[in-house]
Length: 302
Image 1 (cartoon, helix red, strand yellow):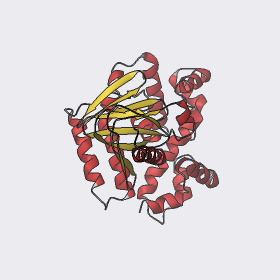
Image 2: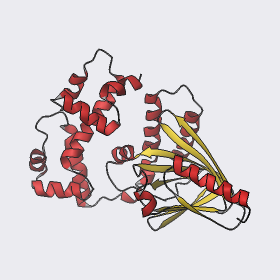
Image 3: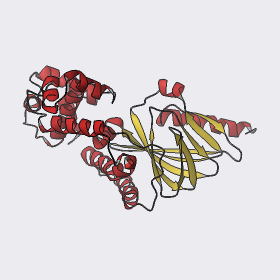
Image 4: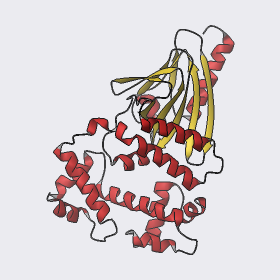
């Protein structure tokens, strides 16, 4: 990459990547450098079309520390091929394949020759809700021959081409893509160990009683036949806190109601029905999780 103009183009492309996709570093590979980036925002669908060749893009602990790790990248390969690495696993993507990359862990992407792919940003909370906090397999090639992969490609293309999608519809499309791909993301979790089954049973118990005032760690532990300390440890092993999980679950369900609630439905009543007795607390907690107040969230979903 001796040419000054090519070096400048390389630096501009990397700067664009850092601005749009999060913090990355890069190094040139043998051959001609190719680097283009197109950004598209279709309501809740935040995606970038990356055309690249002759370059290795990577993300170390340093880039993660200085950037936002609240995402997963769902990579849709459009043309050519690419190699991706994460968690000691390497996948080779060919046209039509899909993989998932966790923004909170180091990763590396190699484009030896011209390649084109779409990187769709999926908020971590959507992956966690859909996969119920089970481990997901990243940098695993999901073959274009899988019907769910083909459907996801089609859904993405149709959503990108539809300018009339509302916030609610685009968010539903995003969740549908994750739901379609979930079995492939979790294919190594077919046989769950006893502790994992117990954790999933606790999550189901919480969902079944999410509107109950009695839903507290002590009650959950008793109903699940374990000590409170064991319950806390079970959630801590997943990087979670029981009370925080319950609050976030209630907020997510409140958000679902707000998307379809009429303007004359009182916000305090919605919060109260999902376990928030104090409206001020509900409003503050909602804004912390979603970045806007319940009232503003309802307006945006219109």
